[in-house]
Amino acid sequence: MPTRSTEAATWDAALPRLLEDVYTFARSGPRLHEDWAEDVRAVMERSVADPRGWSAVEWQMDNAVRESGYPFYPFRALTAEDLRSGLRPVTAGAAVELLASLAQEWFFEGSPVRSREDRDTVLADARTVLDRFGPDAAFWTSSDLARGSEAPDFLARDLEGGHPFTDHMMDLGLIAVSADEVGVFWSFNAN
Image 1 (cartoon, rainbow, N blue to C red):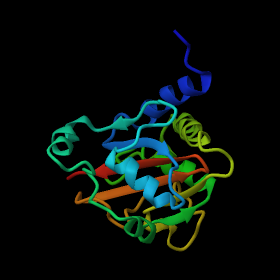
Image 2 (spheres, rainbow, N blue to C red):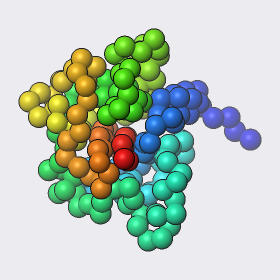
Image 3 (spheres, rainbow, N blue to C red):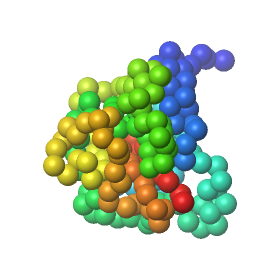
Image 4 (spheres, helix red, strand yellow):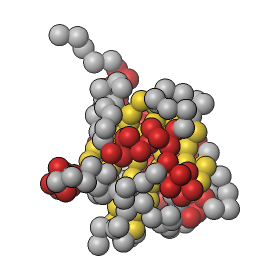
């Protein structure tokens, strides 16, 4: 039996350590279209598999809704235009901070990443996850903090939601786009 690569093992350790304890969605898929938003839609709908066969993180209680004919759940049925119009670009550094911040219950948690004892570990895991997409990756977010800047300091302020992509009270997402793959990382406050 072939052994998994060190890169895959590192991803498989960092992703759940970062996002498993909160209501999140974290999946990757292949770039099959010229328009990256079409590839993101396919990942949200779960109609494509991770091209590397690496792990994903999803809230399992959503399975019944998805299996009953709503494959996008917890996302709304979205068009590529819906995605492009609701997302704003951010730098790679801001993307790391945002992904690290999704590791917390960002709307309710009294101890955000900036004040956690394991802050450096959380940021390192976020870097590990996003390194998969390479140095030329582009990043997009739904956060309102990115309205005025492509490099908002996601650790300095409380996170804010933004353009809603679900019917939950709050949702916040990050998209990674490389030449070969897309990654979709989303956090939900389902109250």
